[in-house]
Image (tube, rainbow, N blue to C red; front, side):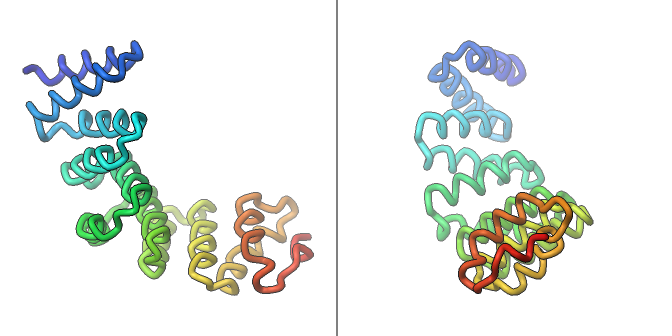
Length: 194
C-alpha cells in the first residue's frame, strides 16, 4: 500500500462527506502503517464525531505515543481523555508527557488544562508556569494560571494575578470571566474594576 496515495484517497472521501468510508480508509492505513500519526489523528477525529469517544481517545493516544511533540495530537488526547473520565488509565502517558522538556507553550497549556480538570492542580500550575516561561507576557497563560489557582481554591493568589487586568482602562474579558466565578466566594466586589 502506498501510504501517501491512501492518505489522499481518505482525505478525498472525507472532503466528499463520506465519513464512514473515510474512517475505514484511515483504519486500513493505521493497520498497514502503524507509525502514521496523521491517519491516527484523522481516525480519532472521525471516531469523536461519531460519538465513539473511547475509540477516539485510543487513536489520539497512539498518535501521541508516536510523536509527543505534535501539539494537535497532545491537545486532542488531553481533551478526549478528560471527556471519557479515564484519568487512571491516562496517568502513564500523562506522566510521560509531564516528564518531557517541551519548548512549546501550547503543549504545556494543554497539559495544564488536563491536570487541572483531573484535580492535579500542583502539576497544572507547574505546566502553566512552563507555558508562560516559553512565552513571556502571553496573557493566555497568565490568565490560565489564575483560572487554575481559582479551581484549586487559591482565590487570593488568583486575584493578585487578575487585578492588573481588571483595573486596566479596558478590563480584559478573560480576567473578568475568571474573576466572576469566584468573587462572591471571597467577598470581593466588582468595584475593583475601574
